[in-house]
Length: 412
Image (cartoon, rainbow, N blue to C red; front, top):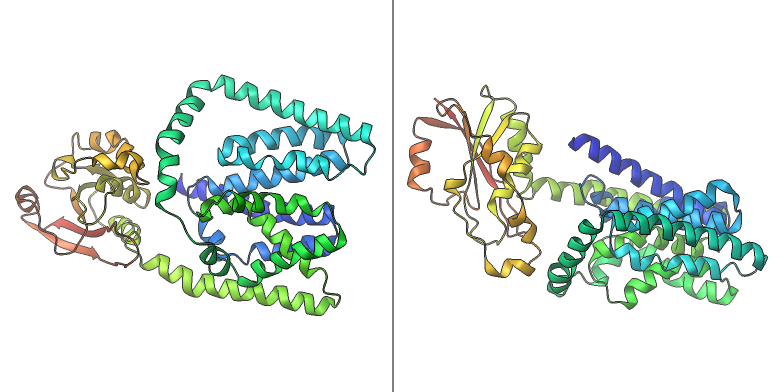
């Protein structure tokens, strides 16, 4: 399942690159489209999100698809675009709630094409708007209980938590992606104003809206990265010498790929969470088919230690069971509006049920702890009596408080 999800997310990211090219080519020319598609790869933070099982990359893809399909519907019409646009808009709405606000780009697309025949434009805009309204409205009404509950969660949990954490725009635009992309995007504003190019409003709308609203978390800005790449490509297209332009874009991409391969990747491989992946791979080499996990309370983090169990389960084919009695981690009161609340809402019934019929003397014992020297409960000491330590995975970092030091014990 993990491989299937990651393959699907990778496919969506690749599709976003193609859509970015198509938007640039449709609005302007082949040069802008090609440069934008390449520059989208010059964002190492975006590359790190592709393997994750989060909604951000799908939300970015469907939002970019909605923009391209709406542009196609307005400019070219045709059954294909007029059907695809409402479907894409609906999928963008369902992929992430923050996209609802960003879909204000749809009327912007209509307004930037007032140079077309107004009757034709009005008909096409009506078809897209009415189709998206009926389709999205019908789905929302059909899933009203789910949508209303998620809306309640958004107001009671996510909105209060927004002010507790954020990244600076300097970090986002000059570290998480190549600084030249941000500089070129800023320059493109002046280029568009000088040329009085109204179509430029399409690619700058989402980013300017997010910045105006004070969005500081890079996850909320990620959906606008394809538009940011198009803004930068718009400025680069002003370089008359094609060889110079290709050189600048190639150097930008090469620098970021080197950064991703030799900075981001080694860092991600050495953070504490990587211990769970390495432990899972180690468990696949042991003889026992059953694994009993003891997740000890965290000493510096409010994260529920039990969430380490399903993460470990992702990376091993063994039957993983959670021994809840040893965890004894109580739910903090402040966690209701904390970013880690979801770790306490996770339902561990499946891993608790896996203990039924577990062969006590044959199962491999895994201890997940916050520190290698964390004291063990007496019950746990008795449990591993007669066991030997067959593997210890103790990579740690100074970035995250949640630590997952893993020790694997097998019967002697």
